[in-house]
Image (cartoon, rainbow, N blue to C red):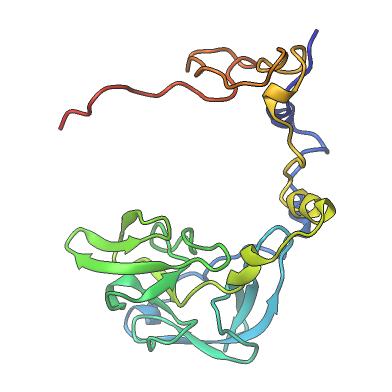
Length: 240
């Protein structure tokens, strides 16, 4: 009969692999763009900075003068009671949210919008930051922590500064239980077992007298066989 692989069992849904969204503090995104943000700035006050289960970076709750609140990724150095500003006329201080077209080149930014008004989609993990490389007629170029460069609409917003809690990746786990709870908060199974350490009935890589690598599997292989190293999408020299 065999045994369903972990990835296949995840796809069936159910309580075991259900995302624990009830433990989230709420939607973490910029507030909608106000008309005055295009020419001046809007003042916000940091009401609270909280930890969200499954997220490394802290979440800041900000409030406008009219009482409307929203949540944003907290940059390094943000504190409760601080006044920050959204808009094109906001000063270039840590925590302020400005459109990319008014941010100087070389500035460290985070929580960048992928499309105008989407609330922030890129560079949101703890300690992450992007560097604004240049302004071009086609958009604003930003370099990610990976070194990749992506073009954004010049009206997309971003936060000035580096995402807080950057030292979280340096904190040792010390015991397996800590790692278990870390991944459980993200609905990930831990620990994982290598396929080639299993028996033949449990995994296509299992069995044999010695553990050794496997050849790439065809991209057209059926589910259950398509595991491990998948064949390349293409081969040969790329033609320009």
